[in-house]
Length: 116
Image (cartoon, rainbow, N blue to C red; front, side):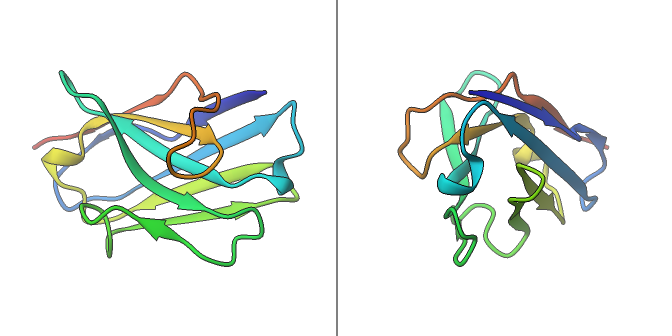
């Protein structure tokens, strides 16, 4: 499995970013997908998950109402729309094969920095 994230960057508080993750090497449409993040000096934190069919979406309390996960199975892509970003959202964001709690493979990550 290969996962490649993109879309990170530097944004001011209150701003928005859209992350993408392109997957290959496995039947993407059959797998739940997850976004996780790691802030400086901290462990991995679950952010959001979406089932294979995309019927439901699950979010951590820290991002609920601000982030939206989606997927396009025709393009083997999972996205994370992030709005009203806060400094505490600063982290490296990874997509992971599998649902919440999965120990499946993840990509190299994309840096998100929220700062004025």
